[in-house]
Image (cartoon, rainbow, N blue to C red; front, side):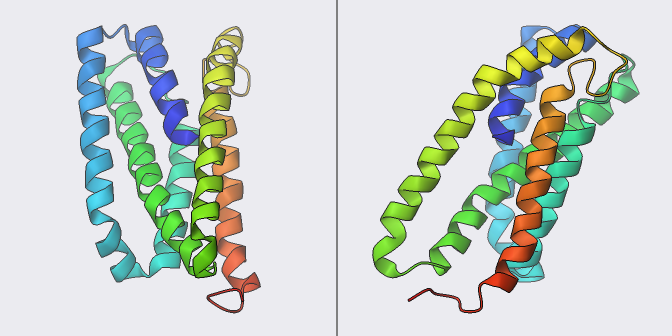
Length: 186
């Protein structure tokens, strides 16, 4: 959901706050694609260096913190724009890393005959999250623009919600291995 929220809200945000053109936004999409590809490429090395659980926790924390902060930066000067883009790219990298990493973790917890069903369920849930992000994201963005001084104001509300969900998912990642005592269920 974080990935889809960024794709939906980024053009609205940069257009509203920075008055960026479509050409400038297209360069952001290029950076988005390059950072996603880099995160996917580095996924095995990061998991080997830190261990899979720590790597997932680090990516979960990075996703949660970056999504809370990237849209809170609402200045119009160059420094604010740079901080916003940098934090948003951290969010993109973390979510791009988490997708295959979580799928690999799920495959280790299931019997061999249940992989197809589990990955189908994961894909369906991801699609539902994308639909929810599309439906609610723009509405919440517009709503939060009405009160620029309030909590989540200035367009940040949808990403604060994504941050909370990401934080909850990261907490689940931290607790789940302790609840699962064996690598495979029988």
